[in-house]
Each structure stands twice: as structure tokens, then as C-alpha cells.
Length: 162
Image (cartoon, rainbow, N blue to C red):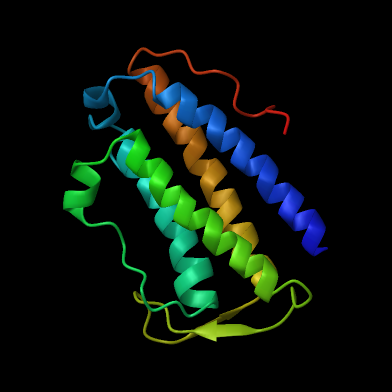
């Protein structure tokens, strides 16, 4: 199953790369512009939020990496696509480590304290990986919709073949 989940994540990375290439064609002012109707506000802020979700749930929660911190408002405000790419390099390293640690323990119980909850949360590695990946695709749809709302025509990022 480890090999299969690694293949799945590699496909996700392919779709992410297609979106990165598209976003690099959009002026930075538009990537940082607030787009009404979307919770995270801007394309850049949304994509950093996605990276932080992976880093928090897989790194800080499951792997107990204590060096994690959510991107600061200053980091978000001063980010461009390259900085988002750099944050996703940390995500890729974290996912690889997560897959190695939990390679045969997908139903194991993982318990840790969640910063915004009073009681610890117990879940499984499979749930954590599924949550972070589906979360990315939810926000990828929002990012594509924001780009359209700003007047850009995104490529098809749903059928990217690895």
C-alpha cells in the first residue's frame, strides 16, 4: 500500500506543478489580490494555507515535528509563486517522511493535541493523508475559480497525467 500511496501523491504533485506553471503566468498583484467570496482571500494566501495544512497534520500532528509554524501574515503578504513552491518542497519532504514512518500502519491510532481544540484528537494515518490531499483539491478548485474571476483561463488541472 505504501507504494500505491506514493504513486498517488506523485500524481497530485503533477497536478500541482501544472497549476504552478499556470500561476507563474499571472502578475503577482493579481495573485495577491483579495478575491471576494473565498475564505482565504487571495490565490497566494490560499495556496500557502494548503501547504500549511499538510505541514501541520502530517508533520506537527502525526510526526510530532516541533519546528512547524503556520506562515505569518508577513510571509503570506510577501510571497510569490516561487515562495509557495519552496513551501511545497517542505510539504513533499514531510509527505515522504510520513509515508516511510507509517508505511505499514495505516490503521494505527495517532493521538496528539490540536492547537485549536481543548481535547486531544485521535485518528489514523490514512485519515490524515486523505484529509490533506482532499483539502488540497478543494482549494485547488477555489484557486482555479479565483483565477477565472480575475479574468484568466486556467488549463485543465484535473486530468494531468503523471
